[in-house]
Image 1: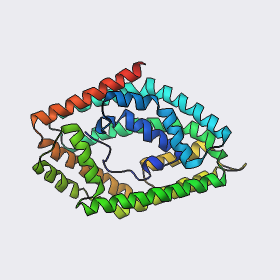
Image 2: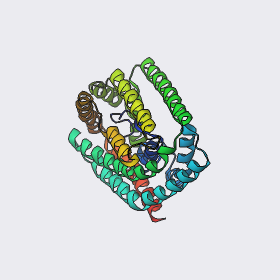
Image 3: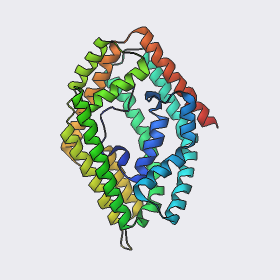
Image 4: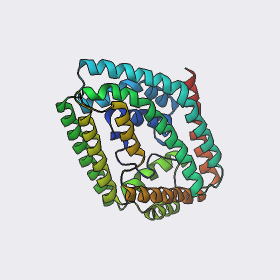
Length: 304
């Protein structure tokens, strides 16, 4: 039931500093936290409570806000945080509860994909809620801030290449390696046979590293070009322009890539279903315990 390294969506947490960072922190803590080695529910609660400050620091590292921008961003993040805690966390908890039910069953690939689609709906809800806040700040970005964002993309891309090279040196692609880490967080220790089964299934998903990276770079350029267009007195409506940009995060502008990504997603659902079918009763109980702990954590946070 891990979604952290499902078929990656290019641009991911770097779509745009405000929209992307909201997804980076709250989506990770609120939806996929059960698939991360956070060290227990108390760590998730602590991280979620500090999310506005963490997000601000992350965004500031990309864009180096001036004083006026800093005040506006901090205020908007606090509003977004209150909304997410009261409106979204109960829905996140419901998804975790649904995942517990599936953990004791033998869902097929399409059933896994249905749960994944529900997760992405929560991500989209957060993105849509963040757009007005982003629109209030984005037109004020200075040329030097966009230059800094471009350099941050370059640094991120270098790191991505290094991670891929390291994974290949270990005899697997990065997505498979990280997915295995998440699987053992959920199931506990996997057997050698289970690991080999999952590697084989993931190898059949059709993931194309070069194609993915090209899409990442295309979306990064779209972000930079969009933010440049929003500057000046004759700039288009920031909110509608950023909404169009956010849509590109969920659906590539390239029809061929959209078709490729849809097929890869379906194949990855099958890979997860294949591994789950080989897990034993104790591994599934382990997963339920982990998911239940995070469900309780989300409901506790929502009630605060």
